[in-house]
Length: 75
Image 1 (cartoon, rainbow, N blue to C red):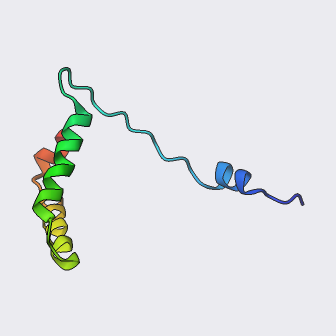
Image 2 (image 1 turned 60 degrees about the horizontal axis):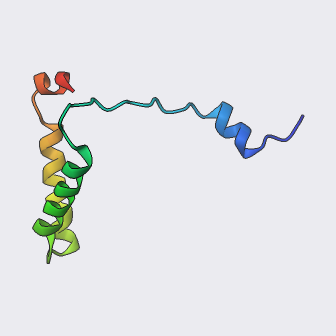
Image 3 (image 1 turned 60 degrees about the vertical axis):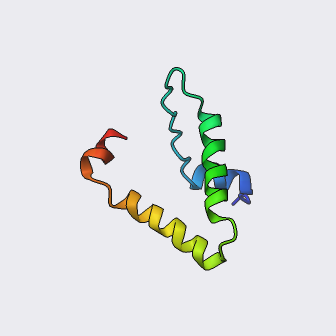
């Protein structure tokens, strides 16, 4: 039996993730929005301890998880 290389293992044994194309919104600059969001998070978490930052992120994730079903369907 031939030896399987890592390339063959990754190609045939692991399914490829589906690529999701982002929706294009005319006139909306995604990179600018992402940069502004990162800067806002940096400003809000500046000076926090690691535990405080964890709590900050956990609260945001909890809101996202608990959003109403009708909003989840729109995504």
